[in-house]
Length: 94
Image 1: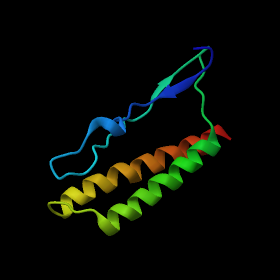
Image 2: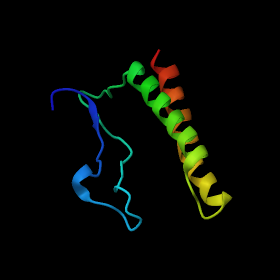
Image 3: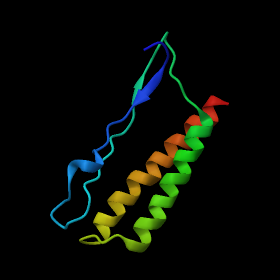
Image 4: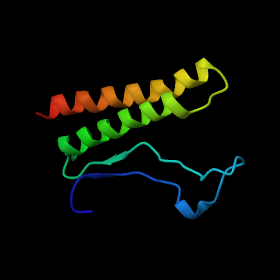
């Protein structure tokens, strides 16, 4: 590498289907890489990620099925916390 960046791992679309016949899906949290003592952060990319996470929350609210409300809340909490982290990083990056 010749600059700071980040990596994430995703399940390949060719990985097949789950027990319910739906495509497998996974995506890790980012793994940030420092270069020269600095992290790379692009506010415009973070804004787009917030938009995608918000859209995912809307999709989950409308269409997802969970065992109970606690399970739904645990998933939504992950999104809310990630959005908050992105907003804080955008603010501190300005």
